[in-house]
Length: 137
Image 1: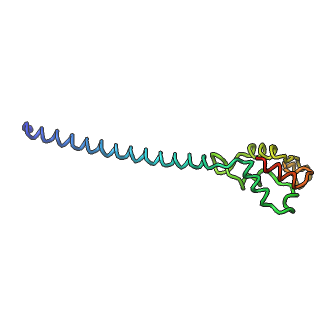
Image 2: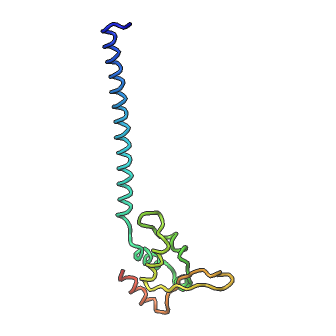
Image 3: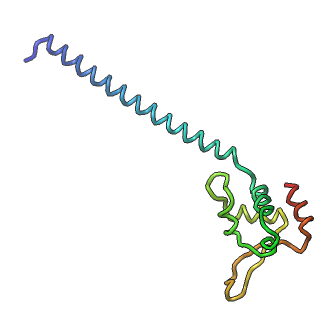
């Protein structure tokens, strides 16, 4: 049987351990919140720095040589060169919508080598007209 003084000492030791565990848990919680808020800030900065797809396509188009501007290209070729708003790459449907806005025409290649792929090309307008159209966005 423990004496009263020993019981008090044991209780105080138990409370000290519980308070140190509570403080440790509180520190872990604060660290977790800090990490989450940092990642959230990075994600918001990534979203805020987004350039609309029309502008990205315009920069891509202006960087092409005249020979490359006349060849058809697929949406997936373009997707890998663009940046999405929320993810690393934009959705193919968003790229297709932006291309339509810019006046590009979609068609399918039904040849045996094309296998029905969807391709994009510039309609038969002059480069000057297309560049004017691209600058409006």
